[in-house]
Image 1 (cartoon, helix red, strand yellow):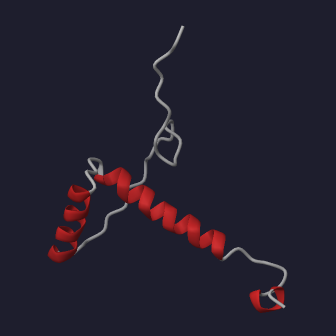
Image 2 (cartoon, helix red, strand yellow):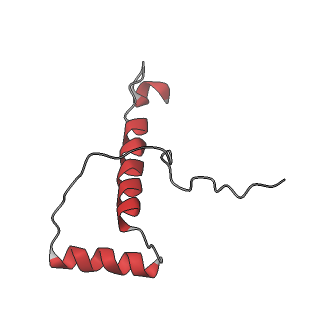
Length: 77
């Protein structure tokens, strides 16, 4: 018997309860830019897109800034 369960499509767990709200103000020009981007790429859920975009940026920077025993110059020698 096949089940029709959908796998979560986002980077976070589907069962995560979000209780914290983040508010950001943007200019009219920034709002038009965001809305045009969402329309161009047919993104329907702005909140999910913003959350995933922000967290992807943070995780990428954390990974790049991870402390190492030696600095980059010493490792390239």
